Amino acid sequence: MTAALETIGLKKRFGGLTATDDVTFRLEKGARHALIGPNGAGKTTFINLLTGVLAPSGGTVLLEGADITRLPPDARVRRGLARTFQINQLFPALTPLETIGLAVSERLGGGWHWWRSLGTRRPIMAEIEAVAERFGLTDILGERTATLPYGKQRLLEIAVAFASKPRVLLLDEPAAGVPEAERADLLAAVAALPREVSVLLIEHDMDLVFSFAERISVLVNGALFTEGTVEEVSTDPRVRAVYLGEAEH
Amino acid sequence: MPAEAGSRSPVEAGLRHRPRWRWQETVFWILAFGSFFLTSDKHLLVSEIAILALFALSLDLILGYAGIVSLGHAAFLGLGAYVAGLLAKHGAGEPLLGLVAAAAAAALAGFATSFLVLRGADLTRLMVTLGVALVFGEIANQAAWLTGGADGLQGITMGPVLGLFEFDIFGRTAHAYTLVVLFILFLLARRVVHSPFGLSIMAIRDNPLRARAVGVPVNRRLVAIYTMAAAYAGVAGALLAQTTQFVSLDVLEFHRSADLILVLVIGGAGYLYGGLIGAVVFKLLQDAFATLTPQYWLFWIGLILVVLVLVGRERISLHAHGVLGRIFGRLGLPGRRVAPLAGGEPRP
Image (tube, chains in turn red, blue):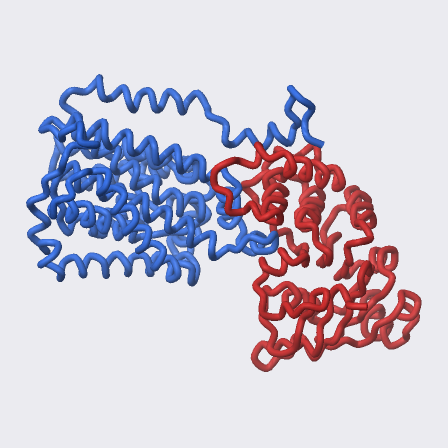
C-alpha cells in the first residue's frame, strides 16, 4: 500500500551542520504517528522540509506516492498536506471566522474570487460552522484573533489546518504552552481528529505522545534513531538513554 | 449548518460584518458630491483632492491591505499621466479612452516591476520602489522627443467627457469627472478588499508564512494586488493630465511618493477611507498655508505631522504601524510606533 507520506534519503545541510541526515520515513494511511527527539534533533527542520518551507539538500518527499519535493508550500496544502505551528502563526487582525473561511475558500479554489464576499456562499459558511463546532470555537468566531486566550488560539491553529481538509496533518507540538486549565479541550480535539486523516505528531510532551500515538519514531542528531510501537520505543533502553533519560531531568 | 430561511446564522452575520455599508460612509459621499454645489470657486481644488485621494487609495491597497511599502508609487502616476497626455496630444481626446489606456499601461508596468518588489523585506522594497521611480523619471527626462523633457508635455487638448461634457475654465467638469471616477474606483476597491481575494491579501499582510500554509499562493496574490494598485495610480495620473492639460516631470518626482505616505499617515491605512480623508486634510492644509505663508508651507505641514503623530498615535491603523514601525525600527530611529515616522520621513 502507498504510504500517506514518505521520505526517501531526505537531507538538509546548513553550511557544515547536517540538520536532517538521510531520513527515510513512512507515515501510513490513517496513522497516529509521533516523532520525538531531544532538543535540536532536527524535528522542526524535518517538518519544514515536508511542508516545503525549506528546500532539501537531497532526497525525495512523496505524498500518497506523488513526488512533491519541488512543490511550494501552498501547492502541497492544496494537495492535502497541512500543518500546524509550534509557535502560533495566525492572522492577528482577522477573526477566527475569517481565518477558517480563508482556508475553506482557498481549498475550494475560491481564493481568486474578487467580487462576492464569503458571507454570500452557503457551502463555505456551512463548513466554517462545522469546523468551529468541532474545535469549540463557535462562541468566539467574531472576535479578533489577537485578543483570544492562548488556549483558543492553539485550537484555532489546528482548526485552520483542519479546514484545509488535509489527508495528512502535521501537528507541531500542539499543546506547547497551553495552560493546564485549557489542556483537556486541546487534547480532546486532537484525539477526535477523524481517522481518514493521517497524523504525524511532533511532540515533547510524553503524556500526549503515549496517549495519542500508535507508532513512534525517534530523531537524534537529524537521523532516524529508531522506530516502533509505543511499547517497543518506551522500553528501548537506548531511547531512554538519549531521550527519556534527558527528559526526566 | 446554514441559517434557516429568514434568520442569519452567526457565521453569516460575522462574515457580513466587515463588508457592511455604514452610515458614516453614506454621509462621507453625500458631502463629497455635495461639494459640487457648495463651492463655486473651489472646483479645481476639489478635483485636485479627488485625484490625490485616488492616488492614496491606490497606495492603501498595497500598504494598508497587503503590507507592501513603496516610496516610488509616483512611477505609476507619472506613467498614467504621460500615456493620457500623449494620447490626447496625438488626437485621441476622449478622456475615458485615456483613463483606460493609462490604467492598462500602469498595470503592465506594475505587473513587470512587482516581481522585483516581491523580493526581500520592507527596507528592500522601499529601495526597489524608489529605484524604479527614479528610473522612470530619468527615462521621461531623456525621452524629450516624446515627453517634452524638462519643458513638459504641451499642446494637450482634451475632448469632452463621453462627447458631452467639455472641460471648462472653472473646473466644473473636472470636479464632477474626477469625483465620479474616484467613486466608481472606490466602490470597486471596496468590493475587492471584502472578497475572498481581499481576505487572502490581508492574511498575507498579517502572516505570509501561515497564508502559504493554508494554500494561498502568496506571490501571485501580491503580484495581482500590486498590478491593480498600479492601474489605480495610472488612472490618477491620467486624471491629473486631463484636468490640467499639461504633464511635466514633476509627476514622477520623489515628493509625489513621499507626500502620498504622509496622506496615508494623516488618514490612516488599511480601511480605504484613510487615503480619502488624508487627501482632503492634506490639500486643505496646503491650500490654507499656501495662502497665508506661501514660503513656509513645508514648515507648517512638517510641524502638524509631528504634532499629529505624537498626539494621535492611533491614527495610523494597526497594520501600517507594523510595516512602518518595522522599517523605522530597523533604521534605528527612536520610538516604537508612529512617532519615528515624523522624524524619519524624508522631506523633499
